[in-house]
Length: 257
Ligand SMILES: [Zn+2]
Image (cartoon, rainbow, N blue to C red; front, side):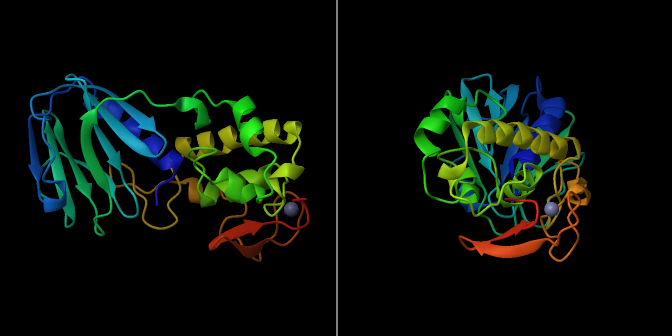
């Protein structure tokens, strides 16, 4: 499933391709998306990310909200030949965007553009004070907390493991055991890890591809995720895999305390 860096990669690529362009036509191939309308003839004024949603803002106060979920992928094509699992096509003067989605869980909605609360997004106006007040006293594990989108938006499993390794924090520690200084360090590291992945156009562990069908390159940068049994780059310890809340957690027991 695409995480924040992958969605941000798509948004940045879409901005370059479609901002200021008019939607000339739409074609819907999937009945589940049949209610989509009010797009044709409108100009794209912005492409924004809200959490893990892609928001294509139109000049009629509406926006196209896309959540890729499990297997959704946006593809840019010069030609209008439908990809195998194409569900919708948006045609612009310079090419076409397809939503290709084998499992059909991705959602596309046209809604009135709403203001979004950016206080949980670490790339926007993240509100550390509010986070500390509401969540820092919780007994839940630090990894579970940082993946809870009611607390922080945009940190999924891969990046949760990578960020905790970077700041040498054991993923099983209770959130309440971290000091304010630990959290400041954590969110600083989170930005670095996520920004680095964006510059590498995301992590292609399973089937992530960018707007042009290319794999990302951040999988070559991972320090712990998927590295079970290998040596830790920080201390030489052996990386372990454990289960937390049904998900795999990778960490180094030697340097993550
Ligand atoms: Zn280590």
